[in-house]
Length: 346
Image 1 (tube, rainbow, N blue to C red):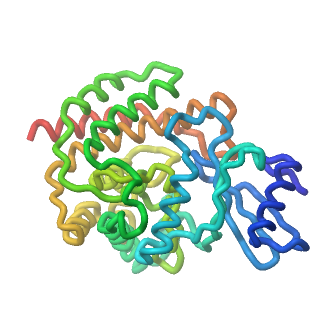
Image 2 (cartoon, rainbow, N blue to C red; image 1 turned 180 degrees about the vertical axis):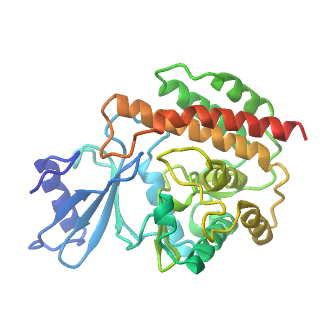
Image 3 (tube, rainbow, N blue to C red; image 1 turned 45 degrees about the vertical axis):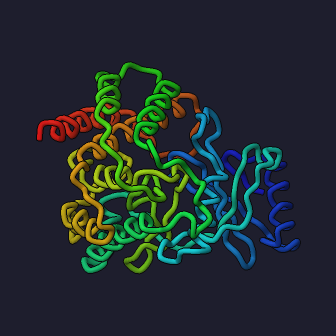
């Protein structure tokens, strides 16, 4: 066995035995496991056998916050959406393993879906102009379709508590910040306080992805082949997804960062205003309060990046791609406060 980051030989042997027990690989298969770089939160491995390619997802190596990196929740939402709602492209799931004796942490196994991750501007522009335009629309349509899913119809009626969702989200991410912070962050407390004091009335509830953006999807032939990274999914306010989508798609423009390239107006990608109109048309949702949700999206991204930075300082990350994450937190706070100020000054 070649060296596998985060997995020793004994863990590898136990994993192969589990895969054989679930008929995912044959006893005589040569099974290779390799770490897939690029993700900055949960750890992802690709598993290759004679007739099958699989993906394994597990939490980070250490400093796992309460309620974060819950493999069983991610497995459950993928299974529900995959079995009952084909408009939401997700990989087929196979096994959820809570036994930490296998590889040292809970994990689940799903199908490997061929496709590309478009994270940088060059990658986003590597598809044709026609495909760029279609991708922007497809990305929006998939999010709208997700928010139209009846949770009860896919076995997710008890997947969360929609009522009071945003109040709890502000408290949760403020608490997450307190648990993964090792440095002074100017204005972050004021930002959290202002958010908690101005939470808008919630009008809608749905399944929410929690971190929806282009590079959390696999792209094939100019369309979304699979939506990944459901670790933050729950039942809640769908506008929280839309606000964070705005931050990723357009808000990060002009910031040199390693997280994801804002593609608003890049090449033939549709501008964010067009996509928001398209989303509203497909859902019927009123986006009048979206400014607050955009501000919250900035706050959430700031806390996520600070948590990634903190794990990196503890040596609990695998692979590269973490350069510049710590430097992104300050601009997130500044732009979030600006979004909140613009919203409250209307």
